[in-house]
View 1 (spheres, each protein chain N blue to C red):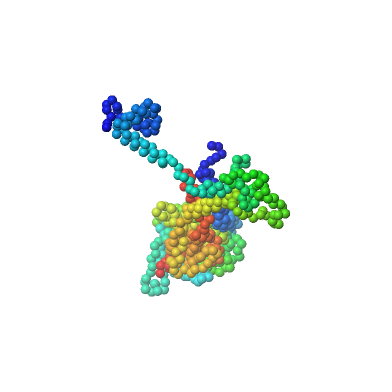
View 2: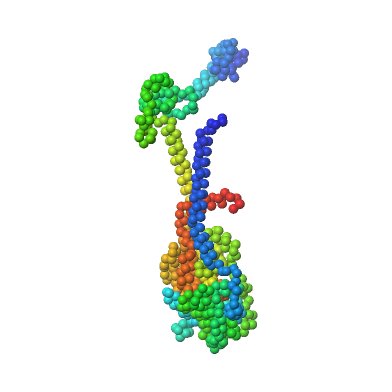
Length: 383
Length: 211
């Protein structure tokens, strides 16, 4: 009968309409949440990108800077082709204290750097610690790093002097808008090796130094022959598409960091049983200083922080420990970042403040948004 | 006494006999047979009992007392022009509501019982309609249905929201303990080629942390 639907059918129609309206409203709400919630992080990351992306058009270098850059390039090449051994000291200074170490170093290109840490008591007792060889896998990054350096720093071939009785060239790197040098390198004229290196903060105060107390250089040719293991590729390297996929899966991986730090390397340090990354390393540099950000999904087990000191930086809780490298672990809600860097304290603090924070408890609307996404994936046969 | 071969049993005619569906002649012959045949008599009696039982099942139960009055008290909204009886409620305000089940009142009598219509001067000063009392009319019923629909809508919306939120929840972040020593080495490995960093520093840092 036309116009006289069954009461049950009418009720069903009403319920269907109401459910539809409810789902539609929830979808609208959730869309709003996503825009205002994740959007904040996106804005932060985008802002970082804008401020950090190195100028795509390379700076035209005057002749003096070109000569200084050539010296640095030679130093990078020497590290990957020259065998040497010697005694070296390392020092680092920060607001929380200083750290120094003395070690015997043996470097074989492609095989790694062997280190024997020395201390007064160890020297007296003959005891020493033998670490595993550490293989430098960043050899293919030199050119990229040097181009970033040249775009962010003014280079100067300062003077010629002697270091360990050997003639060296001293290269200074000063921020384009800076007054004091941020780094000085003493480069052996004969081998191209860096015999001494000093880093400074923006006031000119030293924050790190390393220098050989004695050095023995082996035949570069023999060193090259002992280089079978490194092919210049980075294990676990992630390309841009893979990083984008991780971001879509909820990983918050900044494309850049404040202070002119650009992302130049991303890799999966560890993977789970299914092959998905469980630890992602993002390496940033402004050409001189380097920052590694190790990202892990989950919440920080604060009970395991031991000798780290706890501070609150912005919305993030940070645990830091001084050392030759500064280590800062950031609890960003549902992500844990571990920052390892030799950058000055002010730069590190600025970076920590910029890291995106998401509450581990997403709240009702975010859960609704995620629920709609999940239901959509169940319904969508092409997903 | 039993039927002879010349006087066979009723057989299929038993039901017709019980129903009274035979014509006169056939009925007479059947009744004559029944007088002599105990078996057929029993079958016809059985057939009649079944029929009575079936008839009793199909008979509707008598309505409970007072049902008609209660039904009459239920307000109804009817289409314009429907043949519906009206009664005069006790409250004059209900005069415009129609009720089913009571005899129709003469329009003049009704008008007399209701009295004059409320004039504008008698309405509340704030312009709101006067407060209604007494049995519910069709307007109130409609509002109740609207309210009920809205309430059920809100309930369904809340239920949908809760379901979707439940589906979207349930992922507690796993506890993470960063392996700082490993990360230091990895940092040194990746950044060792940079001018400001060197792989050795990472090695020293790790050795220091081991001590």
